[in-house]
Every structure is written in C-alpha cells, then in structure tokens.
Amino acid sequence: GAVVSQHPSWVICKSGTSVKIECRSLDFQATTMFWYRQFPKQSLMLMATSNEGSKATYEQGVEKDKFLINHASLTLSTLTVTSAHPEDSSFYICSATETSYNEQFFGPGTRLTVL
Amino acid sequence: AQRVTQPEKLLSVFKGAPVELKCNYSYSGSPELFWYVQYSRQRLQLLLRHISRESIKGFTADLNKGETSFHLKKPFAQEEDSAMYYCALSVERSQGNLIFGKGTKLSVKP
Image (cartoon, rainbow over all chains, first blue to last red; front, side, top):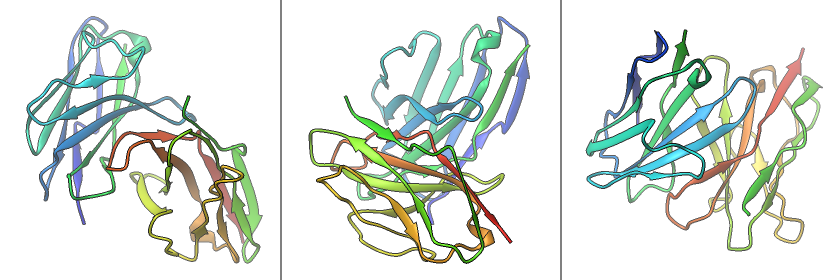
C-alpha cells in the first residue's frame, strides 16, 4: 500500500526558533499533500492543502507566514513553523494522495514541543 | 458550513456486543464519507468509505441522506477493535479536503 513518512517524529525547540517537518510519499507520487494539526484529545484540523509546484491553500485562521509549506517535488512536502512559540506545540500530521486515488494516506505525525 | 458530528467521545462495550458509532454530517452538496481508524500508537488509516459499500473487519456503514448520517456498525465487537474512530467528509468528488469529526474512542472489554 501507499506509505507516507514524516521526519522528525518528535522535536523540541526553543521559543523563537524555526522548525522544519518533512512529509514524504515513499512509493507513489503525491500530487496533493495535506497538513493537519491535532491538539490533545481533539480531532484533526486541516491547516493547508498543497499541490506540487504551486502555492499552498491555507484554511481560514491559519497564518501562512507562520506555517510555511513547500511542495517542491511529487514526493516531498515540508512544513516550517517559523518563530515558534509554546502555543504552536502540537501534533502535526501530513497526508498525501495521487490523482487516481480516492483516499488520503497519512503519515505517523510529528510531535512538536516549543519550550 | 460543512461539519461532521460524532456525539460520543467514548463508547465502551463488552466483547461480542454490537457496536454503533454515530456520525452525522452537514453538507448541502453530494457528500463523500469515510471512516478512519487509529489504533494505539499507529497512524490514521482508512477503514471504509461509503462509495465502495464494502465491509472491512466486520464493520459496515450506510449513508442515510435523509438523516444525514453515516453510522459505523459491527454486530460483534472484538477486543482488537479498541481504537479511535474518526468520521470524515469530503466536499469534493476527487480526493479533496477531509473534514473530520472529533472522534470516538471505542473500548472493547473482555
């Protein structure tokens, strides 16, 4: 089946620094990737949708200058949390899909803790 | 606005008992609905989707447009069914964005 990986699986950083999270589709070409955020004991909230080679589409309320998304290739999308603050601490999950699929394949998630 | 509601945060049943996890949606267009499952310490994975009308691991779900529901059912719960279940709505015909419910934690006791 289609496999999506994320790196790192967890990261701790100081307030004010930037953190990059990678999402890779390992055995298929992901024309679309999605980034979600999940708070403890809450559901997944879609942050943005990115299509390879074009700018990401952000959901209402998500700061695009804070959460930089790049989808430069068909197998890699990155989410950079810029000038991270403690309130950015969360579980970030990506998913990926290909045009012919009717399903999103999820990565294992990245736990971000900002001190 | 599109919305998915899962009214139960936690559902606890005994092994062998029937299970029904409720899901209601709000969407004026033609919905595409999914159930995703997340077992302990594992990633989210698709359980079933309404368009395929299939049964996976004994689970079924029927789309009821009149009641705007997509409840997940299994006649005899197993301990290995214990997991977090999310109902999701796609507002586009293709893979599109998914709108998730808040999830229901199913606990199957021996």
